[in-house]
Image (cartoon, rainbow, N blue to C red; front, side, top):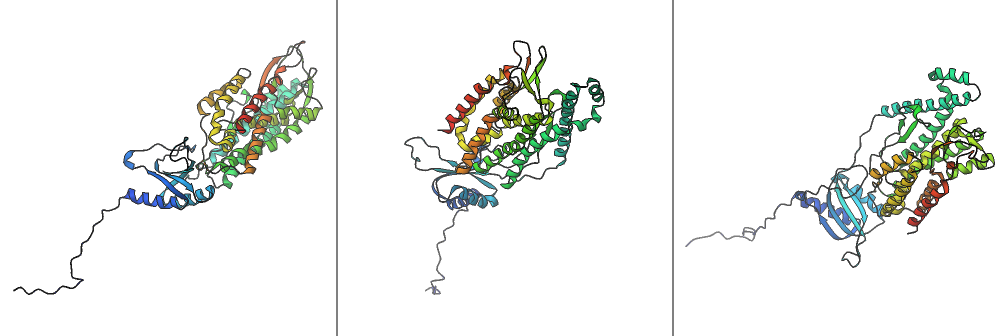
Length: 457
């Protein structure tokens, strides 16, 4: 007989269930699901396993962000989209991930037709490091010299009309006479600087990392009558939503215009009106609607008329103002990465891409009139399709920004110059060149029709 010790309830063997360890991928998926669930009623979800090698970036950010898709959630946002993005983005910072908000694209009768919103989760966040300021200062100094040279050429040219000997003497020591170009140089740099600082302060207001302006000098100052290739700033973070895209895109041209128009009017009031001389080759500055109106206001009639025309280069401020309007027009072309492309995309979203070919055709036709547009057509062929797509495409523009965006596109129509610079030999049968304004209305009308047709949809 075997005597056993009585066992208590606690001494009895217990069946233990050993759970398999949760992988890092599953932990991440659970974490992402929980975070997204705070802002969305999730109806569908898809996770991309690292082993699948999905390295393609699912969205355009305009910055070449190296990231890949981790997860996609479909459903309906629980709160307003802008607040939802801000909340989810803050929650994903510790995970080094970013959300991308999109409206769900569905075809008729699809199963998910009632699911309006999509949230993509992508890896990586942009943490730009500060850049040195000395390249900006060096380029600004070079641009200042370049535009001073142009301004000095203009001043000496004006002097040459009354005193050729003194003008030749000044040309022989032109580097000592650069102060004569200050009116043009300071006026143009004020317009360009206001343009770029408009972008800069709008970006900083939205806490976006952005560089200081990079001014671009003309390598050979006497090669053109402008002296600079413009300026730019580099945005170093993707736009969060269409409101930011509009604010940053429109702030530059509108800020530059605030200075360009008064400078033009003051300059025209001091410009000479001269009779065109037969047998002389003249270079005519092109008309925009604003420039044509400015001449009418200052001189009481539209010029050229009756053989008389304004000699715009006789006033450095007038030439700087006209150049500022031209730069504004070039930037406001509503295609791709140009300021006008940002404004149009913020207003219309993906529908803005539908204007690419109509506008490109118009620009191609203008290249037959002015060789200047040929370079722009080539550039737009390669870069015109690239848009700065915000991370949050669900949040629309508010009503105030919508009206401002439409106003900005109207400004583009008003400042656009179909034939910026054209040559013409004056003769007795044609005392002034019709090219100065002949292409204005035939070009402006199609541009306005194309833009209005898209805005009404």
